[in-house]
Structures are given as C-alpha cells and as structure tokens.
Image (tube, rainbow, N blue to C red; front, side, top):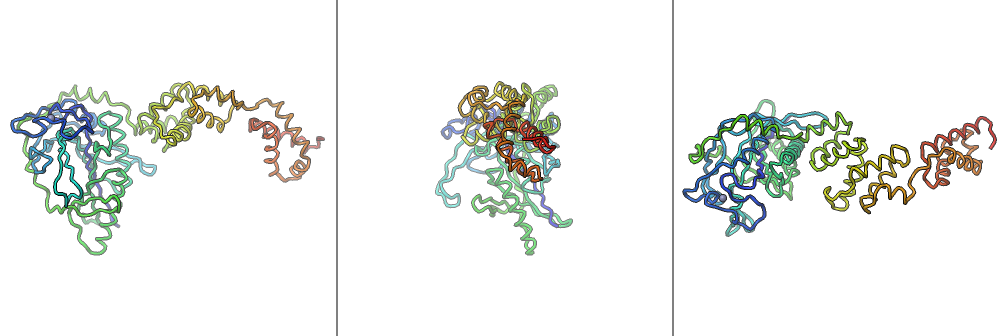
Length: 483
Ligand SMILES: [Zn+2]
C-alpha cells in the first residue's frame, strides 16, 4: 500500500492598513507603483519599522491555530535575487518564528482529524511581476511594487494530510477563521491567501521524495493538484521510475501537474539576522489581551450548533463557517427560538432564493419580526410548514409582511373540527362506491377520500384533522352506521 504524505504552506496577507515595515497603503487594485516609498522600494539607507498591528494580527492567528507564542522572535534576511525583490532579500522570520507547535481539527467523514501546525511566522511580501504573454517567451515584464512589503503570515503545517479532500477542508476552515478574526480577507482571487503543497508517496517503510506544487489559485485546484500528483507518483513508482525532487506547476485546464524547476538541494538563502531591526519582544500582558479578543471560532460554533441546538452537521457547518450567516442565524434563534426550523428555512428557502436572485445576505429584510409572526402561525397550527416556506419566499420577493400574505391570501388552515366533519360526511355520502371499497378492505381509496375532502375545503383543511375525522367517520360506517 502506498501512503501519501502531504503538507501545506499557506501565505496569508494580513489586513493591516499599512505595510509591514513602512507606512505605505496596502490597498488592493490601485494603479501600479502608487503605494511605494524608499523602504518598500529597497532604496539604500532606508530603515524598516515593525508594524504593531501586523504583529497583533499574527498573534491572533497563532492563538486561533493553537500555537505557542515566542515572546522573543527575530527577523532575518532571506537572500535571493528576483526583479520583484529590489532589496535582494526578503525580511522574514527564521529560527524563532512568532508562533509554533499548533494544530487545527478538521471534520473528516464524521470524525475529527488533527492537522499539526509546525510554525507561523510574519514576513513581507515581494512586488508583483506581470509577464506579457507566456513567461518563457515574453520580451519584457512589468513590476508593480504596491504589494512589496505587504505583511504576510506564513503557516507551515506538518505533513499530516493524506488526501486532497483533507487539504480542502483545512483551507476552508482556515479561511473562515481568518475572516472571523478579521486578520485577512482570505480572498484567494486577490492573492490574500496563497497555498503551496508538498506531496510525497511512500511504500512500506521507504521515505518518499518530496515534490512541491505551486500556482494553485483555488481550494478546488489544491484538491485536484494533490489527487493528481498522488496518482502520478504512484504510477511512476509502479513503472520503476524515480521521483525527482522538483517544483511542479498545476495546469488548471488539463488538471495535471507539470515540471517547473528541479530542486537538487535546498536553496541556500544565506539567512542572517536583520541588522536594521531589533528582536521582537512581546509583553505577556499584551499577548494575553489579544487572546481575550478572540471570538468563538467557526469550528467551535459548528460543534455547539450540533450538540446544543440539534442542527444537522452539514447545516451547522455551512452556517457557522460564514460569519454573516452565523450572526443572522443566532440573532433569530436568540429572539425566536426554533433553531432546527430556522436553520432549515434559512438554508433551504432563504439562501436558496437569495442565490437564485444573485443577492447577498446583507440585502435580506426577513428578520426577527418576520420569524416571530411566522412561528405564531406555525405554532398555533394555523398554517402548515409547506405554506410557511411559500410565505417566506413571497415575503422576501415582494417585501410584504408575513401577516399581510397569510391574511390576504387566506392561507390560514381550517381547524374547526365541526366544519371539517360536516364536509367529510358530505364527501362520504357523495362517494358510496369508494366508501364500500374502503370498508371491504381496499384501504388505498383513503387517499382519494382525503383528496375529495381537501378539494371541498379549498386545500385549507388541516391535514392531521382531515385524516383523523375521515378515519373516525369511516370506522363509524364500518360498525354499521347508516350513511
Ligand atoms: Zn513603503
């Protein structure tokens, strides 16, 4: 049996207003090279200053991922040459990262799987190279330094993943966490969350050869790339080939990985301590204060929904992982109760309708008061759940109140037993043949009689009562009563 060993390296852009070591704006999408200064352009003599907010965000994230915090951590220069790195080095953390030794628990097939986290360190981003056409053929490239010096937190996991699905779950939860904490937008399409993958495959006690995959621009790509790469390596080993230690690129269209560059040895970055920055020394009180600011996180929320509110697992997670959904849901449940019904109405009817109309939850006007009215009708048996679903959708679409819809359309169920009984007796009189069929044992005509009764009641008879009274009247006939 082959065992895949997979680790992730995730770069998370911290949502500070200014860059890691200068006061330039981090705003995304502005014209190129408009947020630059001597520090982030790497001009000689410019001195970096640590962004306190970035450190705070880093500590928050480290806490949320159950990491220990180094009260003293250090910055290093990681030396390499690339046109988008004008200093010729990147300021990062090395032997003493901000956080280390953490973990995150992800739900996998009804069980909990623990993914250990090796470290989380803060660093600066490089600029962005924009190549014209194909990178290998383009005659020239552009460089945008707006991104140069933007703060990042790099999270390195242990190789605890065994499949693309596990990586997908992990990233989904991680993105939800950074959004809950407010430390990053987590938007992969804006480059605020980037993920590289290490994959190796081994048989028995042999150690596999690690292959790195880059250029993954969605969680789905991460999953597909991992699953493809595991297959590729197993097939290659089966053919007796040797796996080369290399960096591969994921081809989105073909769904395959292709060689990018061979990694013969670990790159020698000649790390050395950044002489322009003192060690980052944190006050214990500062750290624990940040810890206290951490809200209930999505995975804990989901467990609470499941265990104390009785919400089914997939529903609980869909609501809990999206902060806006969770805020909406909890507000309704706190004021109106009925968590299971609210979860169903919200996910199936409300979100279903919003999605269909391409609208955001922010535009939703169906709130606490509407649910209060709705449950007033439901709890007293005046309308059925099915009717309620229609009422919710109509209320959202037409902006009418629940009461207005229920009253104007006459949706209230008939619950008057005498009224229903009179109709039932009439129906039985009008249908002597089905009645005698029923009495001689052909029980399936019961449905026909229910239908006839409902028709007379214009569909508004309370189903439970119609069934009950029909049964009663039929059994009276069975005991010899005359029609
Ligand atoms: Zn700057």
